[in-house]
Image (cartoon, rainbow, N blue to C red; front, side, top):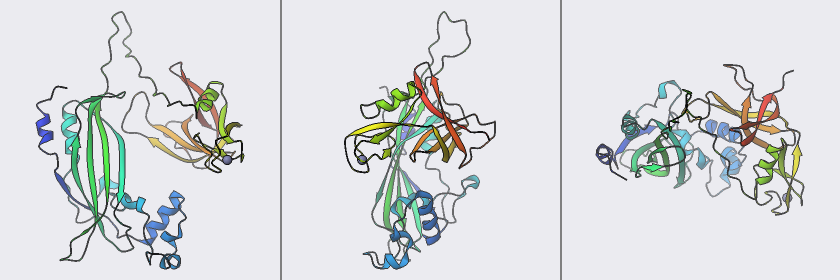
Length: 326
Ligand code: ZN
């Protein structure tokens, strides 16, 4: 791949460290309890002080997976906690944007924990622009993988070195969508539509996708213990049997949770794009698109929904859910 002149500007900031972003609140029981409740975590090590005192920790600790949440900015204008710096660790993305790579998608992130954090600790993190890849072409388009590393510290009293408690590797793909080929004969001004990404179909989940084509919602069922699971896997997560079949679900359920995607714009999806986590009446949950919402209408948790099957691009049939009107 040819190297672009402007990449020297990117090269010059590899390894650059960006300042401290502090947490708004010291590690505290209230946020831990709320996080555990939201995530469905019931480990008493995090919420039951009496129990925690009997463990090797001798006190309550915060769930390690909460690490990133402590130092998140506020809602208003990404408001940062006092003491934080405002230098922008995403400068590299702005450089690429200016060179014609407007889109971004997070590709992977990896959390590493050095130790548990305990109540009252004050955390902050610093960011390093770690590396970028050569220009690559993926199904989404052409661009660069950019890796940032956030290192989390617990602030110590003056004179004592702050203690590293964990690290977050965060990688994004900064890209431009593929150039659309002009059809020589075409008289239509309409650009060709991008297709929906195809699911990864394997021997373990083929029955599900075959079911969609038949307009059947098939949920994996263990022939040994008769329990259901979704998404499909090679083994029963309840009894570890490999003897798996499926059951036809009614397609009735309710919205357990949802997100509405607005940004980034990734063709061919239209925004706002509401996606629900549907709790089926059979007791398992699955993620699927929500359809039939009025403009500006938000999905509602607990709303009764019913499956419908819709075929995209003439080749991919997906279950989607529509609110059941009373
Ligand atoms: Zn089983």
